[in-house]
Image (cartoon, rainbow, N blue to C red; front, side, top):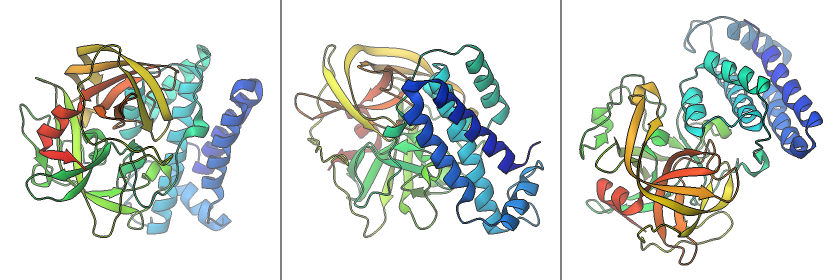
Length: 372
């Protein structure tokens, strides 16, 4: 097994070469290579690199004897960098479904990721993602459409919007369950039938820490912690719901608008075929599309710890105006009516030009919250 620095340098060389050979992607490739280079050299001297690389060359736990806290952080940075470059290349070279890439990344299935990447290189297609739109910013106050994750290795996913708990009046952020729960231990998360809510007592061994920005976007714990996971739901029927709410920490401010300053109306509107919509995702920025179907029932590929494939009934189908409508990191994005800026749905799946969303009223009712 190659040491970490060698593997990361190889990834930098690969994306740089791809950018040089594909003028349409040169700017994006340069940007990604710069992020990876920053990870490689950030705050590390030669001795520290040698120690971490030696540990990375062995198979084992992050908690192995001799692995200091600083070494563990550096090792995670290497792994995050590798996941980023592999996911980007998969989208650049081959239209691999967003959910499949996310689930592989979340589960750290390195061999499967590399196999997909090798296949992508053999079957190169013109699919291009505008990586430069990725939002790696630490936003205070919090805003809709920005990066969050469940510490230590969760995310990135996207904040849907901000809500009030009807029972307690607590202020919360809303996102997908698979975003807010994606660092939970294997076996901790049963898919819940009916309307069963999954709070911390139902998730043994789970961590509640929600950070903004997500760890894969450079977020750190506890410096970037903004909320605690409170409750969520993952079900396939009668309407598929993949949603969770997280209670904001005292003093954490928010605005129900995008980083670009676009505010949303807090009154939901029913979806309709032909409705023109927009969304703001952590990875893709602001994207526009059209609702092309209602009541869709299709399988979404979740991480095995969430039960694997799950048929999500009652989904809204959206066709985007670009190939970047729904890409890794956008999970949880709020689907919004262009004409009124009223919320329509919460995106939970899809990939590339296509998105799948749950009607927002179903999400709000299931979690007993209202948009602020």
